[in-house]
Amino acid sequence: MKHIAGTIILLFFTSLGVSSTTVLKYTCFLKLDLTNSTNDSVVTLGGKIVREQFVNKKGSKVEGKYDYFLITDKEKIFIKLIDSEFKENDLKFYLDKKSVYKVLIQNGRWDVSKKDGRMLESRTGKYIVLKDMKTNCK
Image 1 (cartoon, rainbow, N blue to C red):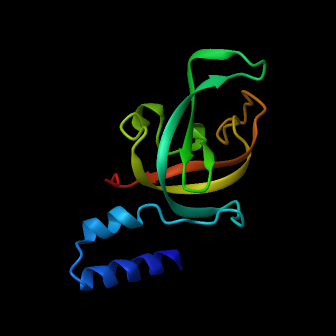
Image 2: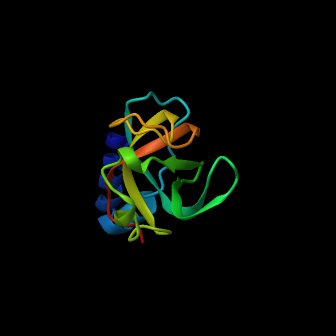
């Protein structure tokens, strides 16, 4: 439904002579309500990725390790890189830039890989898995 609404918005403004680039620039941050999402919801979110120093459960900063979050208009969501299509090195071009991301919304353990099941830390809650990164918003 949100995809259809976005297409209608794009068609409406382009019919008025506004360039599709300008429309996409301003609709990049469509506000989406993620509170009622299911475990298999793939949505498109606008926001920027930020990197923060990783702090272990003892409260110590771990040198060279970082956590990544997507900051939207509504919230700051942990990015679970171990299950994402993209890895830490891929994100350096997107840090602190407004972009659009296709993500899988999940709720569970942040630090357990679905591939091998190992638990690295015991953090839990809402997180996203990156599926695709779209063109940067200007």
